[in-house]
Image (cartoon, rainbow, N blue to C red; front, side, top):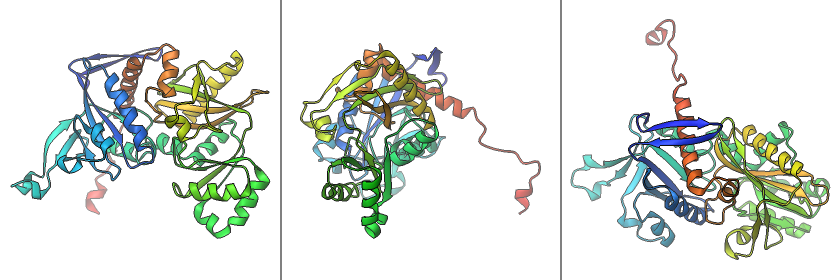
Length: 401
């Protein structure tokens, strides 16, 4: 790896010197309610990666969790057909291999001993997996075991960033303002629904937002204006997660988003504002109806922009994020009061996604952004590799026990 790349950093502006091509495994799809969004993001990333610098290895994960690696993996996952004709692939949790290998089932081969063959070495992984089993630290743990550099937050940053309740608690501990909220487990709600509803009505009132704690792309999120809607919203959210988050609605709150890039010394982009086509920025408003729009840069006073950027970096560091994240805020229209809403450790990379658009407006093109993210991934991996993972005892007591 060191022979392939030299990581040059000048004031957080990483450059890559590549020879020969770096093999980038782009992983997408997955067992998530955001499966379809991931496919569109992955197509954008793979099309934009410089083919003079990188050899792209597409790795698709079906909704059932089957791994396939082929040039038409995106099309296969979009169609939902043809998986039986594709050999399964797995990433070995062995840091001495760093390989993606094909699985040949015994019924497919004459020699059962050849069940594993055709390894594909991977230099760095670019996960474009949104939501559960991709953005929550689970697959990042596999990357760590495999000893392969990967783009984005590590196991801890990914998992706490995905859990909106834990994230809010960490934000509060770091004096980052959040909107008032209540949370409970669906099992508790089933046992004491009246108590939970009264708590929401007393602390938050109506309207309020009801969310699965671990979800993205506004999947399972509702805005409740009455007790009846609150009950329906809780039942919907419980279909996606066991932990339910209820937030006070910041009425006339502007949805402001900031992109963050870096490892230990991250930078924040200029902010952008989402103008939703619906009452709030739900799944349809984001991806389906095509009527939502963004305003880049957001029309805000300079001192408010500076404060938002500062809070975005502070939130990024509070959750121990790395590489990239999009930080979402709510800003009141009259008083410009700022609330951090959530952080997305694997933000969308579609043609309409705010993360790359905000950096483009800040002076970093899409392709350069991908270069920087890959460089940051390798930089962090090399730093981790320099740390000691073993300890030599003063005596060999353990051999005698």
